[in-house]
Length: 70
Image 1 (cartoon, rainbow, N blue to C red):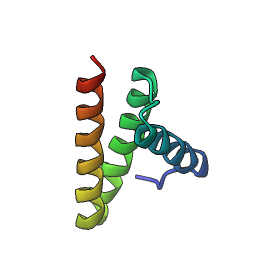
Image 2: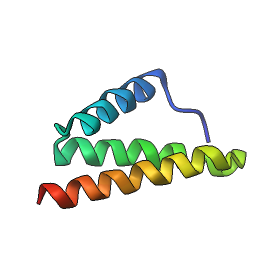
Image 3: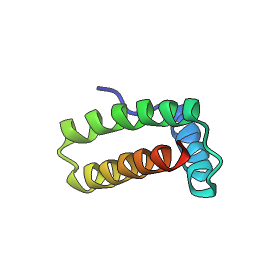
């Protein structure tokens, strides 16, 4: 699998900042999840366990954020 594009990396940063600020919309959360899922596959292929842990933690934070918003 190819690396994330520069646009995906930039968008992930923007969406992560919105998550930290508590201003992420459900649609943006889904977009962030999709980017992270792609990044997770790359990390799995490269056996980058530190990245996998970080991605799983971020996915868990998104889930908690969405639960709190409901």
